[in-house]
Picture 1: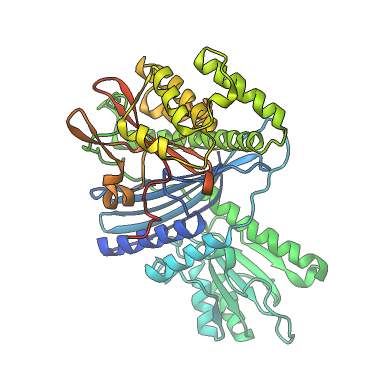
Picture 2 (picture 1 turned 180 degrees about the vertical axis):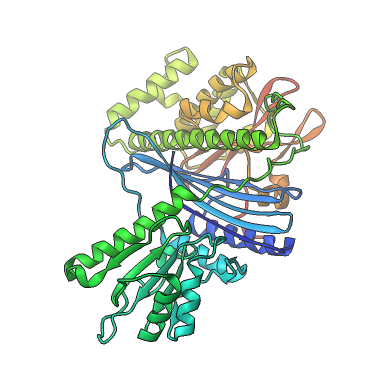
Length: 498
């Protein structure tokens, strides 16, 4: 895994109100840049996971992306934590290679939506570095005293961010080379622009430097043991200056990505609510391990989860692409052959294709033939009322689900691996629904089951728009039954009008 962008900002003496404001910013950003719920209706190649609980000081959104033309899977995490009065905002992008080819991979420049989020965070939560506020603007230095203060800032040991100093090209009309704005460097550096000879003299005197002339950019790294990076634009041909500027920006971003450690946060609190599936028991950590060892172990597990999620997201994208190609196939003869073969395999007989042309016929056939599925009355009623989608497509999904159900009932798979098994079977499976749907429209997902109200959140997703269908399922762990609870259009969720 390769970190391509990392930013971490901390502010002391903050309150829960500040943390909530930060969470709102991250949530709004996620819904604008990646408008999907954590487990519902995510397009292929995209996964959004959220860590959020009322008793958890840590909020985290994790986005995994896989693109067809990319050799890497990208994982983006935005974290807001409030621990002992210290509010931390951490944002990082990590890529995981998915190829065996030896070829250069260049990470793209910081996306504009990430820059926008960092700017909003800096406005909402004042953050300081070496008693200097981190801002989204270039500080202009004009006097000798200001230049001296800037020079002394170079030697402040607790400074964590690089100091980027541009000396203007005195006596010319040339615009600044770097100090036009922070752009992708926002939150990563302090940037200043020296515009007079007096300010330059004060800066050189206090910083103990020489051979620094106008039209020069100096980068003072946070580690004073590192030599400053100097770029003299009078020595660079005008045609090459754009490339040099881009290389300087990339160098600072890559240095931050390799230097800034992820914040140590506590593990998620135990959830006492009943889960849809029984999670596997975890072996307790040995008490001989210290807190540092436990934190390192948790970070390692989270890294493994992110890598596995990347593999799963890419696999789902590939499956979705292949499914789309099959669905868009124009060869009607091949389509009829596939339907005939599928129907023969799932019924054990060789009926005529025209025998299954309605949802009523499909539902009756599924109920009589799929021995590992239990069809609730509501599923039969809603399925038979369904109009529009092709009955054979839904029948095939139920057939695949029947195969998954047989493995689940035999104890071969658990809730944690159910999504991967469904994907392998060609099913687009979601284990739950959005929190909004759970709170506002819970009655849509409830069924009467053995004298109790149970919530059928797990569902199979198929099609879009006029061809959209959802098959909701309840996994009865007590009776080891897989209950098909509903077959029909999308039930109400966060996108529905109140």
